[in-house]
Image (tube, rainbow, N blue to C red; front, side, top):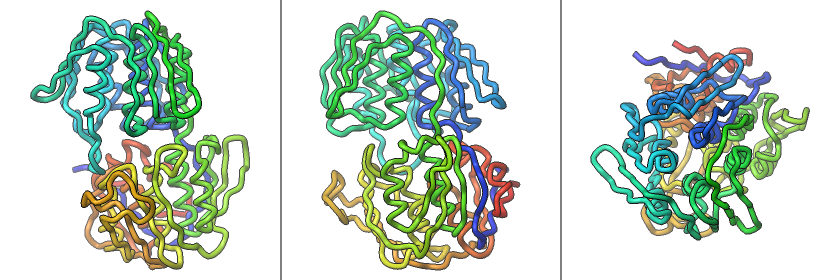
Length: 436
């Protein structure tokens, strides 16, 4: 039997919480550490399921890993990596294996990684990762259970991404830092986690320039060494706690987050009726200022409104008086969670039309826009609810906290993969949440 959360809502959630290190950085940092020829130490490492999965991956390749969860430090010694074949029986819980292809090619000239899977939020095509390997000079083939690649030497490329994909940008960076020549990546992603990865690679000896207009230029080097890198605070998590505070009419102070990484989130938060104060260099207090107002927002690549902010924010919009619109332009199938919210009392209608500016999903039949009619009282559900993915799971917790009655969530490992033990972390707040 897996554990469950039972949330009894109807009260403002108040208290303080410290953000973990960013999940969307630490997983790539562990991959990058395997490029070095000496150990790397990562600090502010979050004690979450995602890190455990990655630790098992690199240990499976032969790397030595020392993870002090209490201190939040993790040391990776890649010098003992001896296997170019990644064996991973639980590959379905993580899409990171494909990023090990360039790492293993740099080290061994060969790579075999398991098939990819993950949260069911829309297609996360790996076509580019495969194309990138071939452009850099590798032979990459799909085989039963995963991918095989080999290369006699990787060479720099000039490439323009058709879309500023985070995964594609990361893949190009990992190929290019040790490829011969100068690589130019145009229309690259520039999320804070990407810039942190670039900072880490530079500290390891890479030569990387970021120029205006989403262009990254990488001058390949012959080797990289280990470094020490601090993991930036998780901006997705911070926005989740902000949404929890405002949706419940509560007051939550969030520590360990750089305010500038929240940029447009704070603008939308203020627009809907949320209030926030800067109470420290890396601390913000979030609360509700008054009656919540409906808004229209579109998710987009950084510096736009992040797709991972969308689900918790949608719960907040159910409490706004009027009709709000969310136009999802990053993933085409990210509104599956709204069915449960409707069962809890929300009034959300999903549309296949672009409600807003036309996007790449226009006229393709994907339900990628949502009309949210508010304000609606929410209620707990009698039957247990299965958590479908990480961010939807946190949205369910917020909805349960808003509503009267109790809701039990199952498959909470999908939440803890990114947020850790939420029941323990929220135990000091005015919220009844029990883990069983």
